[in-house]
Amino acid sequence: MNNRIETNKRELITFLLVAFAVPYLMGIPLGICQASGKDTSLFANAQMFYPAAGVMLAFLLARRPGMPVRFYVLHLLVTASCLVMSLLSAFVDLADGMWLLVVNLVIIAGSVLAWVLLLTDKKEKRESYGLRWHGKFLQAMGICALFLVLKTAVVFISVALSGAQAWNEYLAYWQSYLPWSTFLMLIPNFFLCFLPFFGEEYGWRYYLTPVLQQKFGKRKGVLLLGVMWGLWHLPLNLFFYSPETSLQSIAAQLIVCVTLGIFFTYGYELCGRNIWVPVLLHYLNNNMILVWSGSADISNQIYTWADVGVSAILCGLMFLPFLASKVFKDRQVLA
Image 1 (cartoon, helix red, strand yellow):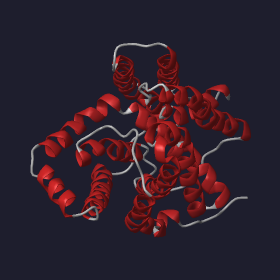
Image 2 (cartoon, helix red, strand yellow; image 1 turned 90 degrees about the vertical axis):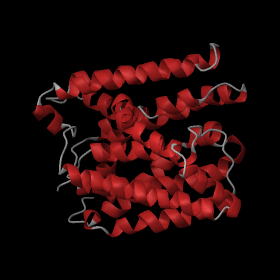
Image 3 (tube, rainbow, N blue to C red; image 1 turned 30 degrees about the vertical axis):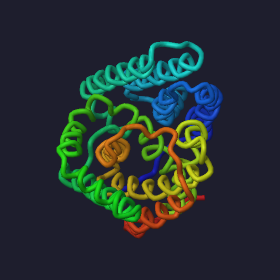
Image 4 (cartoon, helix red, strand yellow; image 1 turned 120 degrees about the horizontal axis):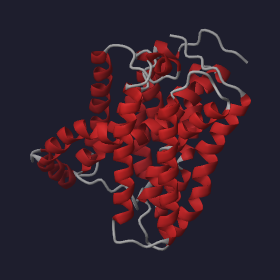
């Protein structure tokens, strides 16, 4: 299927300003929050909305015809709300967890309303702006299942390399009901909180990947996207994920984003440029952490260079082979 996307320099600049400049500027209050010991997870939640917001704002400013305006406006409003609450959380103290609760309620309300607006909009609008489901349902579910198998294998091998005690404790964890019940809860939960995952994928997979592939070719384009996606996380690496080992965190982030970017784009293209496939994959990647580890806390992690090396080897083995797929074969590269 042709993966060309029609855009222009003005739209691309608007996208880059919103998707990249905003989170880098937000790194300042994020750093203030981190230094003062406040909850920084609001900034991570808000940042996920920016890529799609950049696409939508660019299209709205260009006054493109036949847009799903209601859905676009809703996403922009939710984005602005999360951004403002992130800023306020740096300077206004509330009870522990209250800011995060409010943000989560906004995301849930926004996600539910987004489904209503999407499903009641004209098919032509959804089709024209990459919002319709394409391809076979079972094929898409197969891609998601394959991803779960590969990523779970990475987790299990990583634990096994940590030693016998860690391995035995991890096997005992999987023999309990907790990971299985948590996994089942993730299914309905997707429909209540899909919007931030859509927020990233609509920017990365629907818009920026085709733009880069048209310029540099499909393989180089998807690799470059992975690097840009990894560097997009820089403020979070410095002040959220791993403030004490930020350099290792950045390296690990680049590895993950390059390799997952290949697989997410593979699923997107294989299923007929179905944006909902990478949205599901992104949701699974982030939320299965709760299943794999038993904890949803991904802040203040400590990385070693050995961890980075293991991640590079395992993620490379699992996901780099998909770069050889025919979906990354160039037919014509335009300068």
